[in-house]
Image 1 (cartoon, helix red, strand yellow):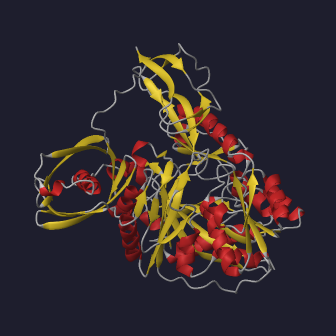
Image 2 (tube, one colour; image 1 turned 90 degrees about the vertical axis):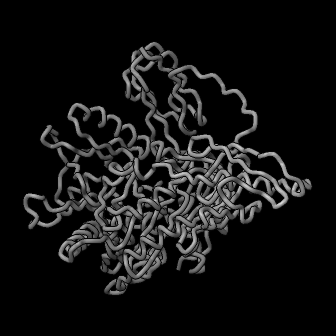
Length: 621
C-alpha cells in the first residue's frame, strides 16, 4: 500500500492530487522552485522539498533532483501530474529504479507513444513526406510534448521552411527534442478524445468521450463530456481505436487518445463524419474533471489503486448527465493572449467545482503557465451545464490581473457553442466579437461614490451643500470622468438616483431599476462588479518620452530568439518577425510595425525583460 506520495509537479494539478491523497490517508510531499516557495501546493503538502532555481529547466524538469527529493522525504510513490516530466520515460525509469511506485504507465508505453510519429506508425498511419501545394493547408507539429508548443498551420508553400525552422526551435526549447513532422490540417474539425483507464489484469476501460474544440494557440480553453452530436457508430469506433492503442503498448493507468473529427463532405453527406487519430497522451489530462463529474469517479484515486495492483471492475460505471469545464487564464485575449502577472487578490466562483493552485493574496509570476483555475459545472443536460457554468463565471469574483473570464462567458453563450456546432477554428472566426469591450457606463460613478463614502468619516460635509466633485478613471483604455455632489440628503449624481453608497457596495437606480455595484480597491485599481478601472491622479505626471517606432515588451518574460542576422541598421519589412519572447509557457512574436530601418536593438537571447521594456526601434522609411 502507498503511504506517502510525491507529486513531481506544481500548481493546480499538485493541489488536485494532494486532495485525493488526503481522502485516502496518504501523506503528501511537494517539490517547489524558489519562485514557488510560497505557492499553494507547497503550503498545503505535509512536506515540501526545495528545488534550487526558478526556471523549469532548473527545477521541475530535473528528474534527478525530484527522485532525490522523494527519497529524502520518505515518499514511496511519485505522481507526475501533467506537463513537465509526466511523459518522460527516463524519469519513470529513474523513479522505479529508486524503488518507488510510479503512478503512471510503464516506461515502455510512454516511450512508444512519446513520439507522435511513432504513435502514428503503431496505428498504421504516416506523416506527409514531400509537401506540395495540393497538400495545403498542413500542420507542422512537434513529435514530442504537447500543449500547442512547436505547432504551426501552414497555408502557403513558401512559408513551410520558415515554419518548420520555427517549430523545431520552439520544440527544442520546450521539450529538448527538435523533431517535427507534417500532417494534413483538417479545416473545421472537432477535437474529440477518449479517456482510457487500464489495470494490470488486462482490463481496459474506454471511459467516455470529451470535446475540446475551443482552443487558442492549439491549447484547450473549454472542454466537455460527453462530446456532443456523435453517432453511436462513431463513438463505438472511437472507443475501439482507443482500446486498440492502449493494448498495442500494454498500457497501464490513465491515458487519453485524441482524434480530429471531420464532418461529412458536402459532396457526399452519406459518408458521415470521419475520425483522424492524432496522438495518445500517456498521462492524466487537464480536462479530466469533466469525465470525473459525468462518471462519478476519482481518476487520481483510480490511478493510485491501479499502481497498487488493484483490479478495475469488468465494466466502467454508467455516464450521467453532462459536464463542462472552462480554463481561467491570467491573460488578455484582446492583445494576442498576452499573459498577465501580479497579485491575485480574490478568487471565488460560485456553484462550480473549482480546481486551482492559487488562493487569495498569491502572486502570479512569469515562470509558469498562465492558468489560474478550472471551473467545472455538471447538470442533467448539456444546455443546463453550459448555462450553469456561464452563470457561475459571470458571478465570479476575480480581483487581480486581467483574465479571460469575459471571453469564457461569451464563448459559452455563443450560438455556435450552445448548438454544438463549434470546431477548432472557433476563435479564429469569432475572437474580435468575443473580446469587444463592453464597459459598464455606471462603473466609474459607482467607484467614485464608494471612494467618497470611504473618505466621508473624516469630516461633517454631509450637513452642507458642496460644489460638484469629479474623479477620473481609465476604463478599457479610455478616460472616463465621474461627477457627483455632497448634499444634505447625501450623495447625488445627475441622471441616476443614489439609493445607497458604501465603501464596498453602491446601489443606483437607473431608469427605475435598482442596480448593485460591488466595489473593491487595491491601490489605484478598482474592481466594480466585473469591470476593472484605474484611478487617475488629479494632476497627471508627464509621460516619458519614447522614440517613434519603439517596440516595447507586451509582458514580462525572456527573450528566446532574435531574427537571424538582425542588427542595428538593418532594413525590415512591416510584419516581419524580429524578436520572440517567452512568458508563462507561451511564445510571443514581436514584429516590425512598419517597413523601415532598425535603428536600435536592445534585446538579446536569454535576456529577462519587464513589461514595457524597450526592445528595439524601427524608423519608417
